[in-house]
Image 1 (cartoon, rainbow, N blue to C red):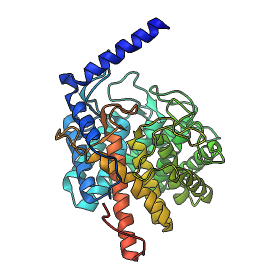
Image 2: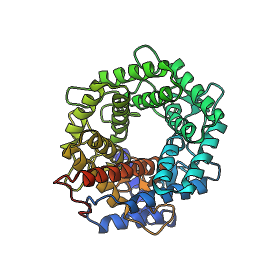
Image 3: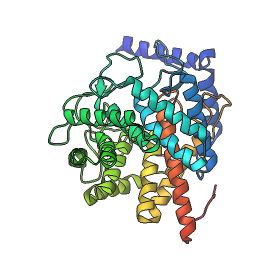
Image 4: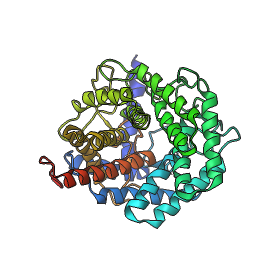
Length: 420
């Protein structure tokens, strides 16, 4: 025990000195900004969206392949060999960044975003594997094997690209991906093979977001097989939901305290399937979870990044990806129902992420992007700016702007814009 404690103390000392090393200067700059600012929820605006898209564009340029880098690492723990700076392109998230860029291109009339979406699509086409799937991990990671979840997320990109560019090779790639997913799925809605090597094996409730991608493919090519598969996947996700709205079997590695990120995935998948397949049970499940989460959001928008099955906080840091995703579900539920509580919860939760984005250290590889955690040293995406956090943030700001427009047009009495 004494030896273990001594080693822990020595490591803590090394980590302290690492804080002030030249290599860690960017992370230190962010940490200083965090210490100087009081956390708050600020109203999302177009400037937050534009800053996020600009960061994605810089990341895309840094990747120089067509794929979007995993993110930017500003610091690494001592005695690790994690790469610093821009990390290799990430197939999974590049895939679902494509629809984000297309949506922004339409909203902003931005031709650059449109061209980037095309280049991302071409890159994904170039790396699709012989079985129709897409590899897990960053590009170049070993082993190079198809992952069901990754393939599902890239499928979102393929479908949106077919709808925009109307090109047969993309349509063919989407069908190949969809057919491979069906080959991995059993009758209960669980994937029985194709597990990623970069998280614990086994079925995951959050794969229901892959089911949503299959529904989108079904609508594109009018193939009922994909709808039926998605419906089974929704059934499986619903089977993991507890009476209080919490989902079991719903984390990359720690099912007893899932990330808000994977909770967000489950909610996004169930909500989308519920809307597209007219499944009221899926919408009811989403509402149950949102009701529980709304009670956990602090007045400044803070939401703990991991949540136990009794909805108590398992950590004191925020998973900014999860907060962005769940905020988007709240806002889409507002657009669907017009309920004030959904708008306000979404605005509050997203506003906290906006606050963290505004802490810009004048470093292009950080400014405008969304970090893994708040504070920066939190355990999810520690000391990194993540492309998927930035993607989901951009999506949810666009959802917020649409919700704000709805409230303004309908003249709802409680709506107060720009109340920063």
